[in-house]
Image (cartoon, rainbow, N blue to C red; front, side):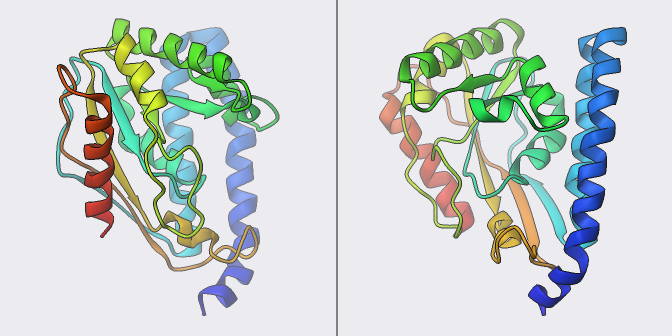
Length: 243
């Protein structure tokens, strides 16, 4: 039934989703060029609200749970599992007051209306997975930015999306660099659940009637601790929530 409904509803969803990307690409340019970075940030927040809740066209049920409320007076590193492209609109909207910046693959920095423009102009670290030196340099720059302004950064330590919901191990590298540049940052795990199910049949049709959620978990202090221990604790916290 979910697949049958998907055939009916997916074209409408893609039409609406694509329209928001196109409209807000223009809105972002005007906001940034005319009104500045704060207006641009607000336009991105509103865009991601519409991108996220456009999923309701598919009958998707969306939930967010804060089992921990992160402080906003220090740098935050949100470490999340990664299941779908729909992970990101939820993070941007639900965590908008923390000014989240992303570690993203460089390919997303061009060619996608709204998304590429935002990544290029929001301070994101656009990394080349085939060039470790470039990737580490970009992550270090982002770490400095986060430390200077008490922003937050979002990183997916698995490195790539899980297409079947089975988590991969969290890698140490990116988190290690961020903590070196922002040593007082708090690590906050985020568990993303069932987003992969939207793509269970591929890009077409999308699955209808799924229930997805974002859960913000208890923060992990990093100072004076071994990086491997910190990353493992974050990974285990996410695994436990998903289970």
